Length: 205
Image 1: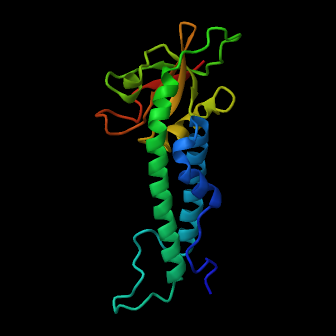
Image 2 (image 1 turned 135 degrees about the horizontal axis):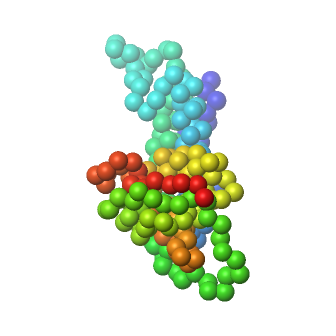
Image 3 (image 1 turned 60 degrees about the vertical axis):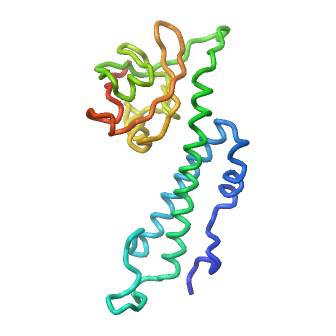
């Protein structure tokens, strides 16, 4: 007997509810939902691998019979759920684009009492790269990229993981330039025609 409900109802109720109300969510809520969906995808891909299958593994033998070495029903249900999650993630990313654009255009409050802590300096910026297109310049200092900041970058390793794990996803980017805080958006990608996902290098400060 499969341990998955026979009606295929694997869906996380919170994700279902949030996706149904996606247009009403704020930027922080959308980014939280994105993170939750990504975690759910990872968890269920692991479950699928545990059955010795992936999204394209054959479920029938050459003779046309269901394979006996895997739980075909559970694999089918997991595949359907993973496809649903991937569609949800695509919708969430699409929704985040205008919210991030609006967020990046908001002026930073002039009455800020303290300057945010930067953790890295940008150098080696390549023209027309993702970082250049985002509005960055050599010498700008990174305050945060998505959830990476001065308190958790782990000698830039967490920054690298975040960038590699979010290819083709728009990420909020905060920098310091001559004492001024700028909120931008950068989309890591390997399709811009140069090396790397950002087209820039970083050094700890």
